Image (cartoon, rainbow, N blue to C red; front, side, top):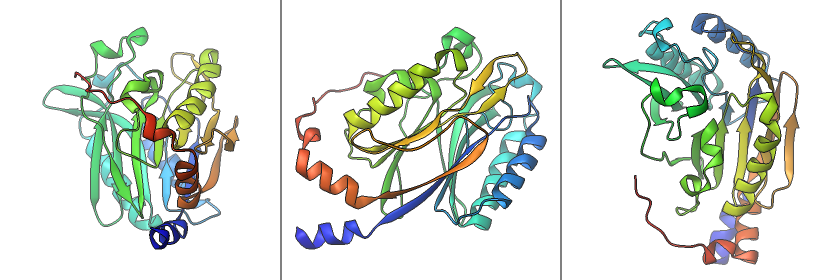
Length: 266
């Protein structure tokens, strides 16, 4: 057991969060913008996280987006993953078979690709009437860390994110509006504490095509809820995550050993 812990403690992961304004319903312009932001990054990282619907903003008009744009963006993510030698994570409008999805892609170097469809569509904006709802969590492993990536409104529903599989990093990509940003701050920290996992939230900034304002507040919290990174402006945030922090605190406090067992009805 001691030998295993020593090996885990040597593992580190460098993560970049890109908090940005978005061009309304313009995938080409957004890809070009994120190209420039990634080119200007000052540090080498293992993972790059983009906001929810990072090529369009939070649009309820997927019919305005050419159906080919989904695959174009995924192929762009593959190119960036290979160029930066990093996983690229973010959600986009994705359409196929006459259905639309708010779909998060987890794209790793060497053409690896998986996806997650947003479980909790945002009824206040009518998202449930436009986009298909997902029913399966995505659990991915990369460089010794286990990820659970989710999307925006999922943050309000702790049962869906409950750490029953011992993931290390919980991620929320979002277009979370300024009037309710206090809830974003508090719930991100709570998800970290209750799941004894790093919790990362990547929000957008600026205003969208409907006039809704976004104030960022992208952040990283450790397994005890301490803030490792935070910003309210348009910028790239960097953080380093370690296995040592996860392993030592879980072994010392053992809160996950007392979690409730349940079956989620989907």
